Length: 460
Ligand SMILES: Nc1ncnc2c1ncn2[C@@H]1O[C@H](COP(=O)(O)OP(=O)(O)O)[C@@H](O)[C@H]1O
Ligand SMILES: [Mg+2]
Image 1: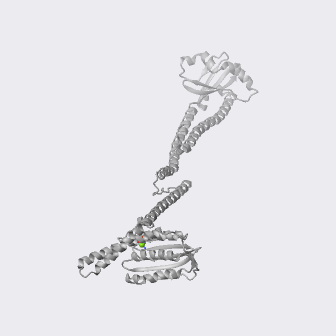
Image 2: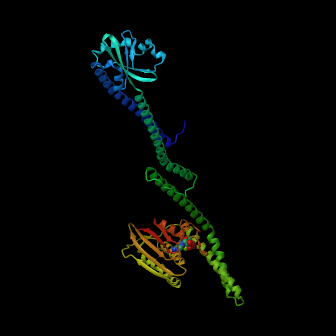
Image 3: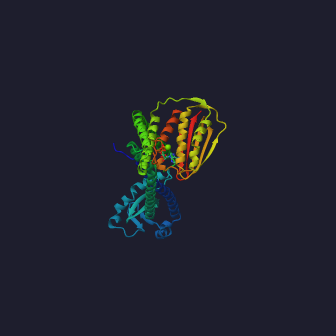
């Protein structure tokens, strides 16, 4: 089956209907107009004919011709032409028999007798000398035929001009309507085409783009819904990928962590012993310090990995939150001071006790505070606040540090994602996991070179 576009389906039927109507309407109007006009015309000419016959003017054809701009032809009762005002007739047209037939004189007598009962005038359309006439008849005494010929060429011309000009206007309007409806159709179908193209992209697995919303109508709503769907799809796909990574990281760490930590502590011990030897040169001392630093780094990664691998049973206890956070801040106080970071804490007083695993919450909070601290190498302000929001307790950590670029913000919770030379990229992944274990969540809001706000929700 032939495939028509939506645009064609919308535009074509209306256009065809419009073409039909706009051609038919002028034709009917012209016909109606001519019909009405010719009624009036007939009545008028009948009036003239009455005056001409009643007043005896018919004896002077020339005067009648001049007064009324008509032609006169008078036939005898034997159909011979007695007199006429018409000149320049061809030989054939002057033939009496031809004329009698043309004027249907044989029928006129009968008709004029019938006419006594009928008010309709007797008229007849003929063409003589190339000019159309309407003929009006009277029977004169002695059975002669008085024929008055009114030229119709001007009316025919007017009708032709009127018809053509109305058709011209119709064609112009049709072209205009076709153009406008084509534009309207294009406006309607373009966003649909865009959406179809976008759907194809999504079907091919490209979930990163959003379809541009060009119209504020049903198609716009559809685009918004589709964008939302694509966004959700991308989120759940990313979540799946992340979950998979976490699972892999967990499994890997479970098998490697212990194997690595034991030789690592031997290496650390040996290096420390070597450093204490009296014959160590300053260069060797430096190298040993470097080795120890790197061992520390590996140890940190392994610790992070072990957090993943740890069995995820929560040790939930009904308890107040602020003391738990304060214990972490107390641990970090010296460190913050050393980095010239001003600490502002604002713990809401209306927090009730609720159930959470204090070790895990400490671990999460510590990671977030450490990140804030590391984001402010030149010092700054770290604001820690807690407040209640609906059925959750919020912990908010705000720093005035370097901020996070837009391209990084989507990757913060991926294991091993780090922008730090000595980072493990496991901190936030762990924080997220801890919060999710508590049925809570974490959100990070950041402006580059202004600062970052980390908000954590724990249901209570
Ligand atoms: N408060 C913050 N300010 C700026 N960047 C941050 C902040 N918190 C996290 N980040 C960015 O997120 C990355 C991942 O953090 P995280 O998972 O804790 O790993 P790590 O701290 O080991 O790099 C960091 O490398 C850093 O780029
Ligand atoms: Mg970190």
